[in-house]
Length: 355
Image 1 (cartoon, rainbow, N blue to C red):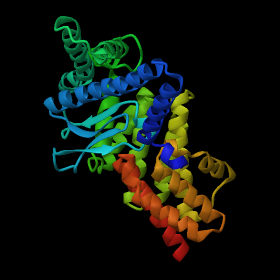
Image 2: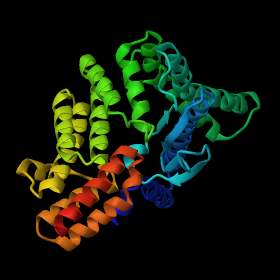
Image 3: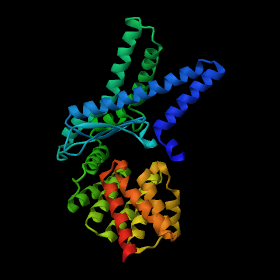
C-alpha cells in the first residue's frame, strides 16, 4: 500500500476521490474548485513540457524523456523517433521535466546556443499560446466554461514563473546565459548532451578533456555528470578501482550547497555500493548512506541499496532477490549510465558470493 501511494497517479486519484467525498459530505463547492485546479495545473505543466519537446524536435534534438504529473513520454528506442506514452512512477519527475539531446556534439558554441534557446523558450511560448487561446474562447467567443478561466490563470502564472530572466534556473535565465555565451552554461549543456547520448561517452581522452574544463570552471553540474560518466566508463571496462576513485574525487569536488550535497550523496552511495561489490566490505558511514536511500532515488536504486544491506546482514536469499529487482527496474531511472552501473554492481556482488 505504501509503495502504491508513493506513485503520482494513485495518489492523485486518491486525492480526487477524497475531495469528491468531502464535497458530498460538506456540500461546499470549494472542494470542486480544488479538483479543477489540480487537473488544470497538470494540463498546464503538460503543455509547458510538450512545448519544449516540439521546439526541441524542430531544432533537430532527440527526446530522452518528458514527464508531467503521472505522464511519461519516452522514445521506443535510441534508434527511432517513435514515442510512447507511459505512466510515470517517480514523484521527482511529476512536477514537469524534459530532457533532450543532440546526435552531434561538435557544434560550435554559437550553433549550440542557437539550437538551445528555441528549445528552452518552447515551454514559455506553449503556455502563452494556451493562455491566449483560452482567453479568446472565454472572453471573445463568450464561453461559459470555468475551466477556461482557470487555464488562462494557470498558464499565465507559468509564463511569468519560467519567463523571468533574473530568477536562477528558469528557462529565461538559462536563455540569457546562453545569449551572453556564458562558458559554464555552454559546458553544462555539452556535458549533459554527452551524458544522455547513451553510448557517446566511450572515449577516455574526451572524458578527461570534459573533466578538466568542469574542474577549471568549478561547475557543480558538470562535475557531477562527468563523475558518473567516468564511473560508468570504468565499470564497462571492469576498472573498479578507477571507478571508485572517480566517484570519490567527484563527490569531494562538489560544493556545500543543498543541491550539491544531494548530488554528492548519490556519488558517495555509488562508491559505497561498488566498494562492497568488489571487496564485500562496507564502512559504517557507507552503511548509514545506504539506510538513507528512499523511494525518491528510484525503485532500482532503493532495491540495490537494500539488497546490499540484506547481503551484509547475512540474508543472502533476500539480498539476491533485491539485487535482481534492482536490475529489472534499472531502466526506470531513465539513465543509461546509472542503469549500466547498477547492472554491473549487482553482477559483481553475485560473482563475489559465488567465488
